[in-house]
Image 1 (spheres, rainbow, N blue to C red):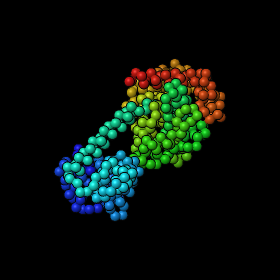
Image 2 (cartoon, helix red, strand yellow):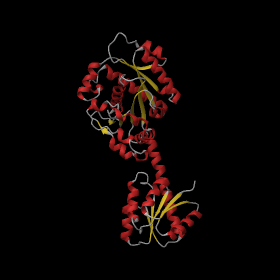
Image 3 (cartoon, one colour):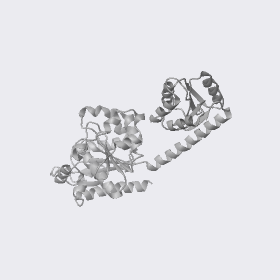
Image 4 (cartoon, one colour):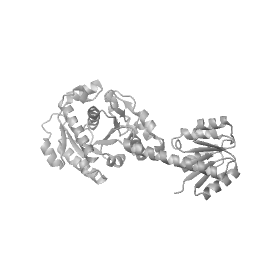
Length: 386
């Protein structure tokens, strides 16, 4: 596809002559006759390069360049200032405003073409380099989900994230994904619940820099992106493009990301779960929960989650004779259980009082050892898939 060049100039003769010359060179051309129109066109057309005049009424080229550099959609677009202003101070102002190159009128068409080719080639190399950097930094995504509520998904997600950090000393992020159903903010004493602001944004405005600033460091070593507890926020769970943009940006910022999907298969979960390298399904030893969990696992496989990426965690939250033993649960479920968590209500309550993770309250507890076993399962899977 031909590279697209946006020409912003109030001189109609320049628009026609330069536009025609560049079209003959095989470029696709779009034009704007003033600064505000040029900014709008840059956002709408996504040009590969902007040819920008300086002396324009209403808004000069310096201000146009500054605004383009402030917009996430145009911050990387090459800008070639093409103007009659030839003084050194003018050029300095142009570069300070955000121009990548500066060329004075009049100039020979071959010189203009050479500057354009150089800028486009430089932009291609930079884009390729950024793409490689993103590939190298892609996070290992671990989804945690249950077929129904009340099975301890958030508690397991938190302790898994903290144990993963302790085991690897790598950057680990923990994200609550269901707006209006957040619980970790209260449990950890964290007031910043930033998920909602991303779901209320345009996908294009969800940048890596914004996501990085929204991650809240916790004393455990992990970083948090938490959901609100306000029930009226739940409809934001339908903002699928925002979720996709958020996870894409998060993947370039952290080594591991533990994603708390809550219960059930909400629409965003159906889009994001197949992107996870590991999916932890939390169940309990009750007959109906086992049946419900089996259906959930079957749905995950239909969505494209490989069976070998699914890890079942049996979470026995309370001491009860009505709970089925692990062997029976595994037989009825039809899928292997990776770990079984024995009831530890006192430890969980202690962790809530101290606003931390249970595995940090008692590092030698059986729960801590079982969480390390789950971490080792994830790391072994990661190693095998490389």
